[in-house]
Length: 182
Image (tube, rainbow, N blue to C red; front, top):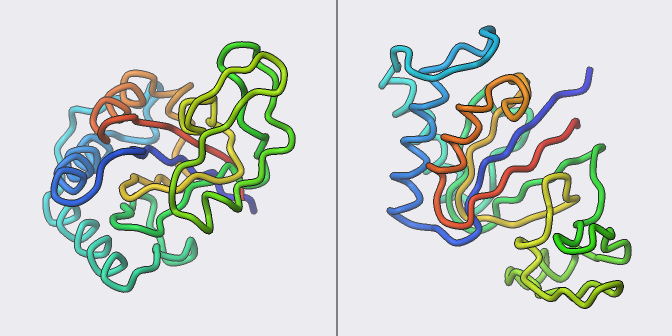
């Protein structure tokens, strides 16, 4: 059975600031009931579970490897270099925010190998920006140092738009959202 993953992440933040932002994002999610329609935050938060999620994130960060998918609960956090996001089977190349053409020849390997967010130019209209400033909601790959990962939650963009917006506002600067099935 396919799993639906949602990633709320920052392209700029790391360290203590990222940890604070993600701790608050975890509280928002844990205060929500995924069975509600719409999914809204504001319920009671199990602070012991918040601490457990953040402790697992710290342990993975110290190992230098993100937590494998099969070891993730329904809510997890990635901290530190090496964390990645992907739309997996729902992936499409980044879309130009000006002309909406797909960057069909985009190779995420440069980002994977170099750890630096690449700057790309649209071959159609000439728009040039860091790849994270393109439409990357269904990207095959992005790198971050802080992200919230939801496994098999309802699509919050559709079924919990207020929570979706609150998470984007909470995860840090240059917040992004990627979702897909694996």
